[in-house]
Image 1 (cartoon, one colour):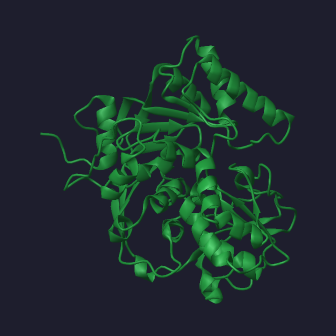
Image 2 (tube, helix red, strand yellow; image 1 turned 180 degrees about the vertical axis):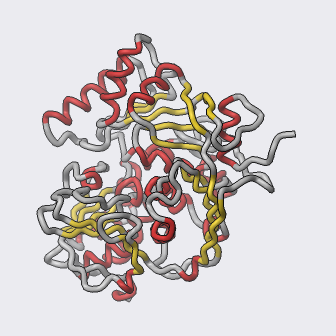
Image 3 (tube, one colour; image 1 turned 135 degrees about the vertical axis):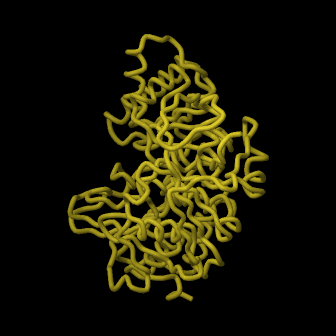
Amino acid sequence: MTRPMNIAEKILAAHAGLDEVKPGQLITAKIDITLANDITGPVAIKEFKKIGVEKVFDSSRVVFVPDHFVPNKDIKSAQQAKMVREFSKEQNLKNYFEVGRMGIEHALLPEKGIVTAGDLIIGADSHTCTYGALGAFSTGVGSTDLACAMAAGETWFKVPSSIKVEFRGKLNKWVSAKDLILHLIGDIGVDGALYKVLEIGGSAIENMEMDGRLTICNMAIEAGAKSGIIVPDNITRQYLESRSVRKPVFYNSDTGAEYEKELVYDASNIEPTVAFPHLPENTKPVSKAGNVKIDQAVIGSCTNGRLSDLKITAEILKGRKVHPDVRLIVFPGTQDIYLEALKLGYIETIIEAQGAVSTPTCGPCLGGWAGILAQGEKCISTTNRNFVGRMGHVDSEVYLSSPAVAAASAVLGRIASPEELD
């Protein structure tokens, strides 16, 4: 009889062909999906070619999404995108996404059903942990490890221990998934889950739609986690039903499964939350933010560029104008999200409020382009990191928040709660 296992251990055991695994164990496991973008992809391609194999292990399971510097911002980025494009054609990859058909990778892959429940996924991007929202084990790796997995279809893991996190109770008005994950990171710190799995549940999560779950798992890495994961339920099944290109496998955690520790939070006690510079753990309730004037607000990214994020943004901006001293830049997560937001009038509302709307791109999140900060400028952003120089000049500042707080701040010209506009 096997030991009781949690969901992460079950997925790793299944992909390693083992009856059971335990924390600290070294395993070799088969991979369902490998992913790279226009920054990490070229490095992986160069390393892949050094290996000496001619073809990737499976042309339907190797995914390239140019999204960081596209549409190309300069000659160097154009060369990087060209390398990814040519390799994808040469390998006849099913899942290569060109400008106009792409999206921000971690918004695009769930939407397209390329990743699904029960998968083991690696990506040369740290926010690959996003797909844990579907009941998958997904994690970021280096480009060299990715190249080997592209060739062999498998890689090695040290089985991580897990931390069980429960958010119980009902969310207050204006409190969202982003506020829950910022609250957690503020509590345990950016190294509070180092090389561990954050298994996130509780009644507040059970009542949360997929957009919010994706936001929470996206930021597991900001607590140092190897992966974030949510046990799949009916909401997961309904989301995957119409889109999953492969049959999902729904794992759960056994009664008596081992956890390093368990954390419980009362969601009704959590306010809209802001992470101050220069770490995601440096959090404060928005009510204690003080008078912080902003120069820019960014709404979008793989964390908060989904349709529900654009909806709440449009609801707050409706009939209002962005503060004259503020630049509001909005990035829908994918082309499909952009199109649906157009049909629903969200984009029109944002533009009427004097916000700028861009094609899907990672752009300003990594200080890449289309929203770089000058010296001394302050930005409130729905992205996932606010390290020194993350969005531009080393003397600029990034404050992380939900779309609701970012939109309200864009209107008022300072970090503010949406309650101030009620």
